[in-house]
Image (cartoon, rainbow, N blue to C red; front, side):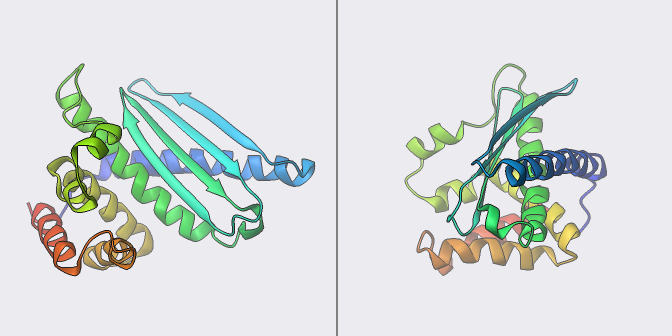
Length: 195
C-alpha cells in the first residue's frame, strides 16, 4: 500500500512542531505561576488559519485532544493535567500527528468545493447521524481517518491496520460500536488505503 502524501505529511509535521512550542512554553509559564493556564494561539498561513487551545486542569489525571476544521481553519484543543506532563508527551505527539493530518485532509475536502464544505460540520453530523458507526464509515471521514492513521503509523513505526485496531478498540470498549461494525469500518478504511 502506498499513500503519496509526503507534502501533507510534511505540513502536519510542521504544524505539530508549532503546537509543541506552544505546549512547552505554556507549561513553563504554568510552572512559574502555579495558576491554571489557558493558552490560545492562532497562526495564519497563506492557505488557512490554525488555532491551538491548551487548558491545564489539575486533578484531571489524563489528557484529551480534540480537533475540528471549518471555513479554512483548523482548531486543535488540548486539555491536560499538568501532573502527567511530560510523561504523556510521546502519546500526545502520536495523537497530534494523526489528528493534524486528519484535519488537513478535511481542509483539502473543503477546497474541492470552494466556498462550500464538501462535508457537513461535526455539529451537523451529530444531528444527522444516529450513532458513531455512521460517522466513522462516512466517505469524508474515511478519507481523513486513513490519512491520519497513515501519519500516526509512520510516527509510531507501526502497521496501519494495528493503528486502526487500536483506535476502533476504544469505541468497542466504550460500547459505541460493535465488533461487527468495527470490522466493517476497518474493511472500508483498508479498501480506501489500497486505492
